[in-house]
Length: 412
Image (cartoon, rainbow, N blue to C red; front, top):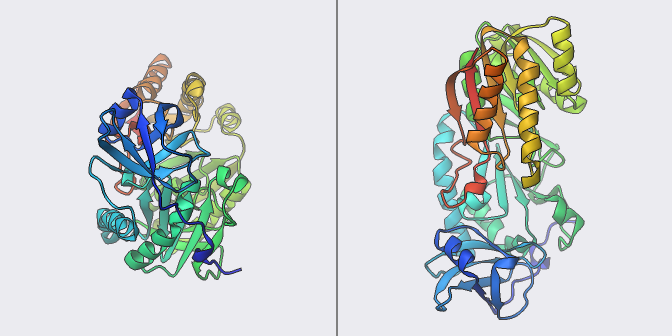
């Protein structure tokens, strides 16, 4: 059935007035984008998802305005702080124009796959939009956005001129009230295939925009992948948690003699092989030997050591080990185990690359556990660089929870 934006609910005309506790008032004055349910001191009336909520301080002065979400502990996703404004189609158009301008430098880098809207960090909390060539993939993390799609979709069309827009829904939205919207629904234009081919720093990749993880690809590691490309010439490379082989492909493009992609997902590694075939017109990629290992990372690393396998570059990009605060200690132990299992495989003067995508893990704890473990093993690491977020994944100082990505480049 074709998507009909007029079938979506409308936000109520009457705004919700909310008064907050002192701690929340301080956070909002510092432009934090979330107001939690427990921080509300008084509320004028109950509202529906997407209704506009106006937040006041203890002296009844305007603090912020945002989208009300009665089904989430983050009760209000804040769109505007300090200065009153009208939340309408022009507001969303202006925000998306700003995000577009910020990403403009990527267009000079032969890159057509990138994040256009990065949620809270672009002033649009709970909304993600990634661009793959001429297709936009919009992912909603809050029911509060549904009534505002009537304004957001035209703004995306006006600023991006896409051929198609795909809607993806968070797990909570898929299991809850999504107003009839479906994950993987094409809400504008037409797709001939589930998979879109795009460029990243001149390399071709494919993203399954209808059914792939997140929006189909991970754009956030683009700059780290490019750094790997500059360090891989003449090296034998092991890419752990390789997923669809993006780091592996960059290593081959940089002149690696052989690349081994290790992941527990056979379908993901099949895509990795497709990515190598898609780029075999590039001599360095065509010449590199590419091997895949479908296995648990820890088990495979142990077996490679037993087989006396060694490499000149190790890339370790695990999934988030700490999605909750009570998982941090266990996550740090997992990072230490990865160092213990992988460093014996690295030749002297080898390059060691390790990343974390968990905001719960601080930069100090992450880099510290790597260095301490390596030193204890008698293989101290000499840092080349510590990196963080790419241009299309900006981080606001007022939202430290958004600073999730950290990566170490070092030599043994």
